Length: 626
Image (cartoon, rainbow, N blue to C red; front, side, top):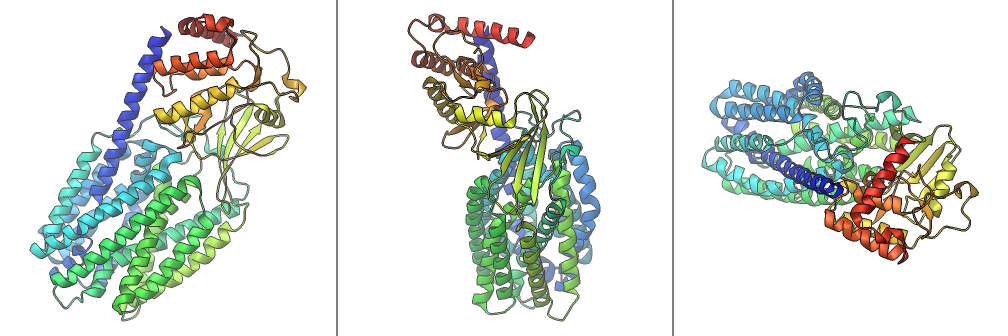
């Protein structure tokens, strides 16, 4: 019966994991198709050369999109948190389709007004819901890594879409608009099969229901001022950076193509090469971010470097020399691939535990839209040389950003803390602590009054044979350990899980009781046989084991550790339904462990695996009842 249950549960879990992997691929495909790379070059030319909209009106109108979108952004994100984010993304695709069709089918100011209106609605529907859907698919821990990976692939995909848009513009000026609408239809279809709320991959730090034991009242910050400064600086940096990127994307080819000429193939070819090279650089820098931000968060250095790159790039673009123009654009493209995933990763690290995902991302977009709209609108009406005025105004804003972000993160007490209650052990809370000036987070566990003090838990970890997180410090109430950059065993691949479990069984097979173990742990051990005892974890289920890419593991949450037989932990791990191994693999590993760790005449080796599991389940039920 037990083997049948494990087989069925294992098959169900693999089916669920396969479905989630397909959903992530569908989300990525939808993101690629939702890109406006096809109209990146043609759109400013369409409005200025074909529809005779002035440059000042065009820039001011695009800024107005941000201002009006603010009114719709937060309400739509709040609704996206209460319902499926996928639905809001599909509605945004529909509004964007209407925007491009309106631009293609109408003429003059009416077309421009219709395009701005539908674009505003689409942006409000996309904001927040887009990242919230990704978080629901991959969880908090993997969000930054997966988002960087999708960004990298998106930039590289645009290398094909940008020439397509420019070539189609030469064939027929409105053709790119129809192509963009068709791609958005594909994005809408790609989203349809996605399950937007998969429960199996929810992060343990993500509230799942209204009745969740997590509460925003449990989130606190040792330095509220420093945390608020970091958050405000992030809003400012993100808003100004997005303003710079959007401004350069809209106006770069206008500095190459004067509005009094036609768009010749030769000149368009220069724009295509520049944009494709820029996106290639953005893809490479996103690949760098994908590798780095999974393990570290070097905010202090990366923010400074990226802001300097944006300042130098804008300064170069402000002059009409072709080499400076192209060099400045490529430098900004390199910074673009880093700044976007970095800001989102930083934002996720600063998110309070119970803050709704879409609403939290929407606050970032909300602040960025205000900053972007105010900057572009105010700078576009100052001076006769609109582009140069905007460029130098943005440079001044970037200098301000650099000063504020460095002031915000230079102090190590600028902590962001996620707090989790625990109702089943002595632990009162588990806190993921980010010191913003540091490169890696720590985890702090606080304990209420009980017989097991943090120092005793630390001693158990030290004397145990299993790998555990590096202990930073202990006090009478808290245990602080170093962050391990891995995922829980239940979310690991089969090969990762097999390597980790093999290492655990090997460590337990050679375990011996330490002679200097504190006397408090040397009480009568729960033993089924006389083959030896050691310090055991006591609760070795898959969610208490973290695994990295190489298959290395650490066991966490040692609150129930004690003097006993490792066979309890081994049976718990190998019989758990969320352990990502097939039944035959579990049985094989169990037999290998018993042969290595137990004597030939041990009673446990005389039983088959069914009898052993049956005896274990009876013992488990009895211990729970007691």
